Length: 369
Image (tube, rainbow, N blue to C red; front, side, top):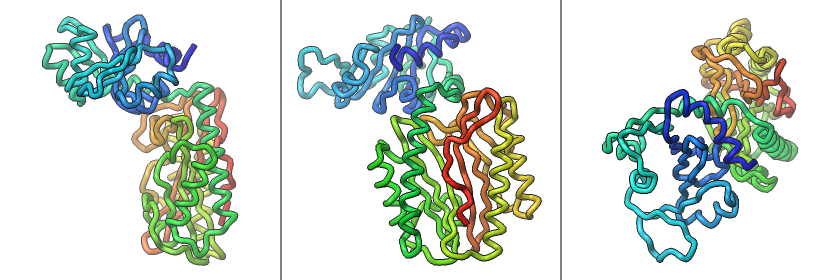
């Protein structure tokens, strides 16, 4: 069974639960999850789980070579220039929503599930008197549980990331600009098989480490300071996320104490990752450790998040999360401390929740200071 059929069969319960006639997927990450395609515009699923995938005309031939006959494939264009060639299955209209009204034949008696109720397509359906139900949370919930192929993609993305970081650290950080290090990470990941980066790498040196989302600048990395590198590759649409804080030279006792406190928070929070544990309780473990060392007021973000098609997915490992962790979710643990004028420390791993506990997907050494 192909990816599209395997993934869309997971939506079958939704049809009965909400009495849906048609399910329409519009959000790009959800489209990628259900089709394995990075250029879909709309996926239509009926109660029999027959599917129609609409893509830009420019991508029609490329996508056909990937999905073969697994789905009805339609190219979309607002104008037919040049004229279609024989066998080129096109839908031409100023509005993509017209396909649902003209070709699918939706009527006011239909109940439609859509994952993006803010889309102009939904406005067209509403104007036609068709009832629309927001199903995005349901699709996001499906995406939380990873199958073997998804886990394999995340593991490969992680391998690429770790090898790329290791190459950079072996060359040394001192004297390089933050942007030089970011460029080396980009090149390293792409040259090792990544299709993209999961996000812009963060290379935060010295006082820049106090900014959790610093990214990178032309600042030259000096001696006797910390550098936080947050990096992840994207491989076959799947992301990974890893952060390491590295000492360049000999750091002060103040910086080392900060780093050791974050390392302990990371280890203890990671040890609590297992099925049935509330996400907010894991967050609390990290905060309690940092509180013991007097750093809790400098911990200004959540402890982790899910990872998959997107680098930030559910579940959220945060103080406000009521979710319980489930087997085969993939999450990060990333406590940090950030002190203006001094610097910052963050350590992050990606972990797979197993039937009885968890195991780290990222395994690169954490004590680098």
